[in-house]
Amino acid sequence: MQTLVDHHGRSFPYLRLSLTEACNYRCTYCLPDGYQVNGHPSFLTLAEIGRLVCGFAALGMSKIRLTGGEPSLRKDLPAIIAAVAAVPGIRRIALTTNGCRLPRLVRGWREAGLTALNVSLDSLDAARYLDITGHDRFAEVTEGIEHALELGFEAVKINAVLLRGRNDDELPAWLDYLRGRDVALRFIELMRTGENGEFFERHHVRAEGLQRQLLADGWMLRPRAADAGPALEYAHPDYRGRIGVIAPYARDFCAGCNRLRVTARGDLRLCLFGNFGISLRPLLQSDDDHHALVAHIATQLGLKAAGHGLHQGLTGITPHLASIGG
Ligand code: SAM
Image (tube, rainbow, N blue to C red; front, side, top):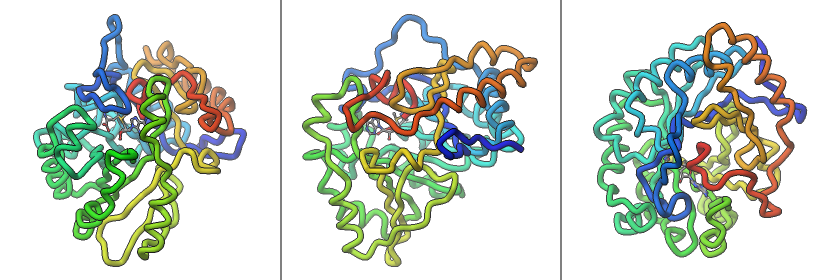
């Protein structure tokens, strides 16, 4: 079997696939005014998603992350999970969600074949959670995480975006939370996008201080698996949970990039902050185009750049992460 490798020697076992641009949240750093429908967006259908994943799997891709927008807004999500799980070669299917529908739906997703779950939870304080996300759903999300922990997922992870003055004093609360729970928390450094410039200036905080604190407290950096996400992960013998840090502004962040993205409209994006997308949709209309699709993806991958331009304030064509599948 072929493996996807680009001209910079990076291999890509991992695809992030956005299922929708729509989101029911209004996170202050992403879609503060909520999702605005623009025209009649048409997102990839179940059949198109099946063909797309077959194409990537033929090139050696083994892990798919379903994201959005908010992927749980898709009524056909269990069918999508099952279709992806049925593709030969796909071993891991993860989902990133805001978690508000977990209590009702997570068991069905697990039964359909989901193997890992990432839940966004920016604060352990319900009032702050409401303030940051615009939604009073802290109880559902935390209850949903407890449900998920009983379902035998390979991994349950929590994403928390670090925000100066809003949640950057919560390490002690997180440590209490992680002491007895088999959860991997990811602190994500806020990224500048096309639309959040002012918010970014006020609330961006580097993760380095947090990393120094973890090391001083006896947390140890763990080795990174080949198909792992972008986090540096720390563990501590006194805690069941682990802490990861995703620092996109750190040196060499892009050298470790093993991710490709496909938007909800079927555009291949070689970098979250790149300047162009490549439409795969015309090749997703018929099973007969499978070989053409595989060849097209392989050719386009040669174009993945060595790094993003975030350090220069270049955010590419990404207005916010919900539009492309953060
Ligand atoms: N709706 C789903 C959710 O809430 O997890 C999936 C999509 S959301 C765009 C994926 C992740 O990106 C979330 O954890 C969110 O907090 C994070 N995110 C969104 N905008 C971000 C930004 N500007 N910087 C860092 N992380 C961001």
